[in-house]
Length: 372
Image (cartoon, rainbow, N blue to C red; front, top):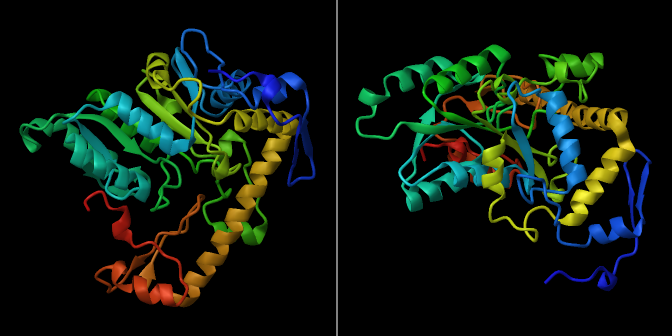
């Protein structure tokens, strides 16, 4: 049953923004919309989100990625994790093979472990270099799959984080993306692009130098942000997962998936109007984005980028002071992580208890391993 709006308790919402702006929502129909099941229907697709939010998302995707094929569509989801897990559900069958990075987001690897145990999914870990997936290694593996992996189904999909990778901070150039895409296209492999960190670019190769010089931050300018698989997707094989979590706030639990329309229809099936992102969150996001406008959003993203670049500079300075000769690392160009390779240590997990006692927050590398 759908409750009648006259029974709803809230008559107005007011959001006070960090930049001093105020968003007030008091129009009766909109206030009711924020308290109702999200029944909005995208014609020919289904219930995939609040229509004004989807309009903004489509504009954002067109501006930031300009997918070079016709027939792409979007749906909202409860963050990236919901997006890529729904993609797994839609694309993978028991016994399939999924290509993954040998090091990856610990939540992803833990969820995939359940698929391996419960659905006989086979994971094929790939080496990760400074630009993410090693395209040459991927091409060699796929070209020789029939004799390298006798009796094993060829990979159906590649799951990867292309920008400011969690945990290695690797970020792919346009050339690297095209090489990986070409290898996947040659073998009919779908690419599931999990890209939550792209907007956290620092505006330079060296965050320390950029911070010291007060270098300009890219904000929402596409030229200053990493490229994407979606931007080179000429034949509709990319499922792109985005989120507001890292550059607005994670508690909203709101993200969006971009893929060929038939796949979005499949993702929408079974979701129903009572599931997915909460109605007030979708309404709040739209009103906040309208209040900001493109210029205000650009300034907000710059503020977020500045905060993480500053933190990165502090971490790099501390590492140089205290860890020289004990570890090695590469300065990230964006994102939220600093990947340290400890020298002369069998496993960083062996140091975890002592580090915890010293109030040092770390995550052992084994927690990210697709081999574990």
